[in-house]
Every structure is written in C-alpha cells, then in structure tokens.
Image 1 (tube, rainbow, N blue to C red):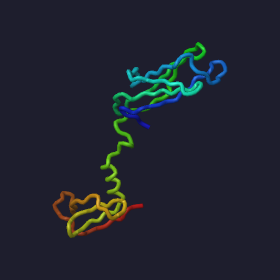
Image 2: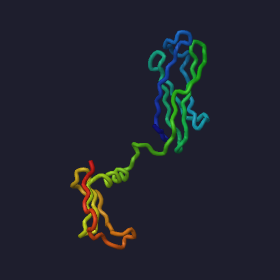
Image 3: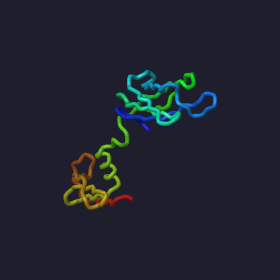
Length: 162
C-alpha cells in the first residue's frame, strides 16, 4: 500500500516485561517520531494506551512526493529498560486507487462496454454498463490522419465484454 500527503496513520504496538515477556504498560507514555527519507520529521505523533501493554500511535502524513519513504519509530521504557523500534513504514505516492478519476473509469467502459460505429453519421458511441445509455460519442475515420470518413467497412458493433 502507498500513502500520500494528509493520510492519517494509526499503528498499534505492544510493550512487555523484559524478564517474563508478559504484557505490561511502559513506565511512561512512549514517544514517537516520524522519519521521512531517513530524517526525523516534525509531524506530531500521538501515542495512546488502549489496553495493558497495547498502544496506538497516530500521525498525519506531511507533504510527500512519489517514492518518499516514511517510518514511524517508537521509544519506550519498560521496567527501567529503554528500547526503540520501528512499528510502521510505507512509501509515498501522489495518487492512490481511491483517487482514480472518472476519466479512468470511462476508459475502462470504452474498452469493455457496448460500442457502435455508425457509417451513416460517421460517429462511434460508447454505452454505459446497461448497454442502452450513451456515454460518449465522437467522429471516426477510416485512416489514421482523419481525412477519410468512416464508410462502414470492418466491424460496426462491439457488445459489452463479460
């Protein structure tokens, strides 16, 4: 998965008794630092105790560029013994799947949905998923240069692919 600027991250981590391994709270609330491309970042990390030995670290991603690396490191002291570890990491991106634009959806529909090429009008029409509602219509030509109007040779209809 990738993260982008403004993404809220919640990471769980645990603390345990150094001698027995049993879940135990830290001596004081652990602290967190977000590292961006290997350097400490000023993003505020909030650490909350949610159960014995279980904590949640929350941070909002700062400005990221595609390919940036981000890591969340936690420092905690348990039974007088200090420790540190990375509890989360990811790579920055400028777009994620949830940001796919309508145009991209139309591209998929144009590839898989019903398409009719009309030799009378010289238009090609792409239909919605129901195969009856036109989505886009445009001129079509016989040649790459767009100088010869479509005359009906070749396939004139393509139904929705399933």
